Image (cartoon, rainbow, N blue to C red; front, side, top):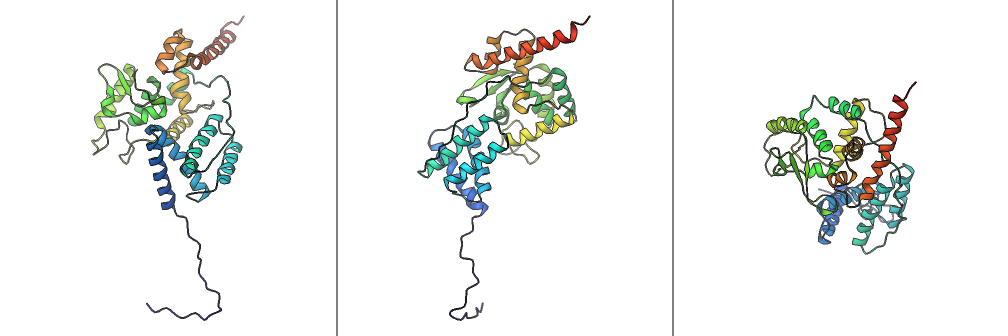
Length: 297
């Protein structure tokens, strides 16, 4: 191709700056994930840390933004009213990212609020199940989450071999803190799971119990959005997301019906019973609500 000559002294119409592309950011995340794995960090944490850092890098439009950018981004998250635990988790993830580059990112650790957790009532839970009843996969996911008292990551990590319908149990691999566990599910959940598994297609190199419409394993962020969609369809307006549905609510309902708190601790796989004791206060609120409702002259 013939290129015209440019006279000396005429300003060249060329942008010499290197463009940061999405591919650069993707490569930075791959490198970051490899770094975390080499530190011996478990896969579930690698995935969540990588997601948080990826969101940050995309916001910064830079595969290696200066530390000041991380502080600025954290302030934005703070202004959005994110939970203290979410802000802390962002800080931990980004600190590892800068550590990989021999840089130091410090952030003020926010002590989580010692508040009574939200929870849904039995009628709320049933309304959410009813809203998903037309979609067997989504209903199976919600019922497995609730009856198995699972975290979102637990559900996403489930493989076909982890389900034992005969014994009504699920095997949790690499759960919170890297722990494995066996959890229970109820007959209602098993019936829906059987229907789902009957129509679930066999997918090459994918043993995940729950797959997306594209045949991929579910990720937590997509699961969060799915739950909020069904919560809206069920006209449940009280605060609370997927964790409230799968963890706080079954714990609250069990304690409200007289289950010993030490048993609830084992079912929810809490290391410290102090975590489970929060639901005692919820139970007091339930008793107060019942008192006000039924003791009427």
